[in-house]
Amino acid sequence: MVMLIISLIGFSIKRNIGDPIRDLVGERVTPEERAVIADKLGLNDPFFKQYTRFVKNVLHGDFGTSLIYRKPCLEVILKHAPATIELVLGAALIIIFISLPLGVFAALKPKHLFSKCIMGFSTLGVSIPVFLTAIMFIYLFSVTLGWLPSYGRGETVDLFNNGYWNSGLLTIDGLKHLVLPCVSLASIMLPLYIRLIRSEMMEVLETEYIKYAWAKGLAPTRIWLVHAFKNTLLPVVTVFGLQIGIMFAFTILTETVFQWQGMGFMFLEAIQRADISLLIAYLVVVASVFVLVNTVVDIFYGFINPTVRISGTK
Amino acid sequence: MSHLLDIQDLEVKFALRTGDITAIDGVSFVLDRGEKLGLVGESGAGKSVTGFSIINLISKPGYISKGKICFEGNEISSYSDEQMRKIRGNRISMIFQDPMMTLNPVFTIGFQMIETLQAHQKISKSDAREIALEKLKKVHIPSPEQRLSQYPHELSGGMRQRIIIAISLLTDPAIIIADEPTTALDVTIQAEIMDLLQELCESDNMALILITHDLGVVSQVTEKIAVMYAGKIIEYGSTDQVVKHPVHPYTEGLIKSIPGTVIKPGEDLVQIPGMMPTLTNIPPGCAFNPRCYLKGAICTTQTPELKDVGNGVSAACHMK
Image (cartoon, rainbow over all chains, first blue to last red):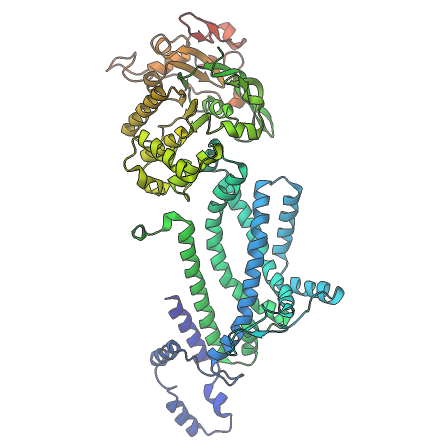
């Protein structure tokens, strides 16, 4: 359903922006010849007929040809996707491994000086936009200290030897190149997560079942890290699922600043050069990633929350 | 021989921004092995706080400001958190008010039972499972094997309260503190749960502190009763005596407000006029004086002490 609506929006854009015939044959063509070509391409058909044709092609993996790259759109996107996926993955890992311990700590010891520092920095972090953080990181770590490279993906390895997945994860140089973009991308979500986890955890700690866990004489670490933690995770996982999709969108900024050859970078290029087929393909692909990620998260949610498990599955 | 539980002059305060307020003011009582005590009073009288202070689990910002709690001859009110943890859920178990909220929704019954045993004993999972099964049978839960792998939301309120009782039995405690264990349940289930608690205490020689506002329940189950009002015990003695011949006007009022006791069918129930004062607003002298029909001049100036009024009952009233 979601996919259908997105593709419809995308397709409407295609129909209304730009003139495909001019793109194809240039301007020195008589109106009569144009009419012939338009007829041949089916551009005079009613909107709905054109749309069904588009959907049919998309279902067969055909998004049309990209203007800039002169290759099928899907191929172009698939070649750019790994860079973005690695970026989002790295950022997601940073978020998980930093926000969980910090959020939990801030919830357990709200009066501790360190917790107050965490909360202070997280407010600061939320209010600084990602491109500013990115530029500051480049200035500090690349220009001043010279520790980390400031642009590009560095040395990559063709993961499956088919030219699609060029991974930066396997070489030290590639990993070095990943650090700054990932941290920048994570910086926008990280403070939100710390706050979310903290407030959820504090709420859970006030519940009756946590009080009962104390009354049962369980050890404090067990109460915090087993009983309270699992209940804290439930809402956090839901939000995280939604946010991963949004992170794909945020990559546009990060990738631009770091000249990262991913999908966001490609998207901007496509906008600048009015490569409408590629734009629509990007929209549809990102939408499907969104749907896919949410489905995976929902399934995972079912594993940690017994109340949503379908009763027939036992 | 010393008492199983001996509480002397317990005082609990809550540290608020505007200053400390006293929730429990000089409460003393004793409990022997296998004895059943009812703590009765209105909401806010300090019954639950008394119960929780025994296992030192008063919600923040409450704290014990004075007094001694001795359990099996040891002064547990001076224990460290870790020492106290070994007593909680082990020697003194607690049953909470609302069974729908007490069990952690994301863990199975078996998990929550086994972890309790493992928190207090070095015991293998399968041995713990055996004990859990045995206790589930003891609280008359049908198909206990199956229950162990179920989650709390799959069970009814009465069933969950039985499971909580089973959890409290796991380590064969000396005392069970039941904080309004039947308030959140249907009337028919209430009776079953009370019968069960009574039966278990008698068969295992466990002591019970039953916290409730229901005098009817207390009179059926317990041997001793302590009536609380505004943080103080105002009448204390054998349940039989207190229910039949209440001394304090407040206790008397409570009993007259229950259908079918002193008041015959057809007669109007007697209401105690007014409301219990809030803790920040306790009147001088006897806290009950604004609502009391026996009120004299001394009642508004001097706080009455608990004194012996015969038949093993003590009451805090100037007029008796």
